[in-house]
Amino acid sequence: MSKIAMIFAGQGSQAVGMGKDFYDNSEVAREMFAKAGERIGVDFKELIFEENEKLGQTAYTQPAILLVQMIAYKLFTDACPDVKPTMFLGHSLGEFSALCASGAIDYVDAVELVHKRGSFMQEACTGVNAGMMVLVGLDDESVEKVCADALNAGKKVWPANYNQDGQLVVAGIKDDLASLEQTFKDAGAKRAILLDMSVASHCELLASAQEPLAELMESMVKDSFIAPIVSNVTTEKYDTKVQAVSLLKDQLVKPVKYKQSILAVAPELDIAIEFGNGITLKGLNRRIAKELKTLNISDMASLEKVKEEICS
Figure 1 (cartoon, rainbow, N blue to C red):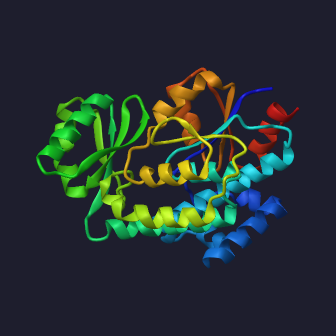
Figure 2 (figure 1 turned 180 degrees about the vertical axis):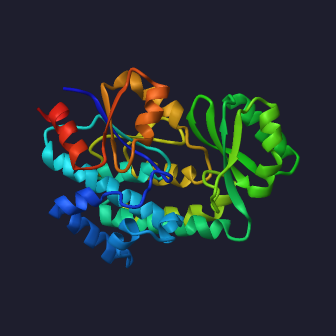
């Protein structure tokens, strides 16, 4: 039997209309939309299918992405009940979808959890002009040195997302990031692009969100993992509630080591399947570990394609 990783992208993978094909063609999807909406008082059809400002606000972006991912995962597992995952892996927010897919938290609880996680993150960054910047063409060590030198000089900037060789996202105070644009370019970056964000993920600016998140997870997460999850923080696998709470609390203030995680687990795998909108991780995997075949399920057509390949 194939060794399969079930993988989930994070913020930035959202788009208006995501999941609509599932909603239009699946009663299960419509029920999941309704139950998730009841839990947090949100009309997910309006939030996801219509142009609006809320989908770009992290407290709403996070539950919207997770919901569509869990619908894709549910439809796949219903169609292919004999396929057993070897492990789960997510990028940032996606690690919460991985936690949900592992069986350690109910999807409705997970929707509430990441909705509140997003609110905690927004509150932590209120009034501090937080931001993020993507760097292209610069090696990890050079980025880390610029950030370390800047921290020593009193600036607040940190490596946040290790996506692939030559693509790393940094987070911190927006003015400090902007002041380092030329420094990063002088170090060899081809591009240094300040992102349109008001939250600085995976850095010390989110320290105040850690305890509220951990408390909420304590009340929702169960010791019930059908397969281990690969931690963004350590790149190692975990499969207990205690580890989940600790590592996802740490994930708020520590960088996402996605590239390192894929490199660590690719030799153990035959296939990865990305669930939810787009092919963000499929694209990254192609550049990180070419030998790891990655499929994706984002609508009914791609679900059928994966079913034919995996479940037959």
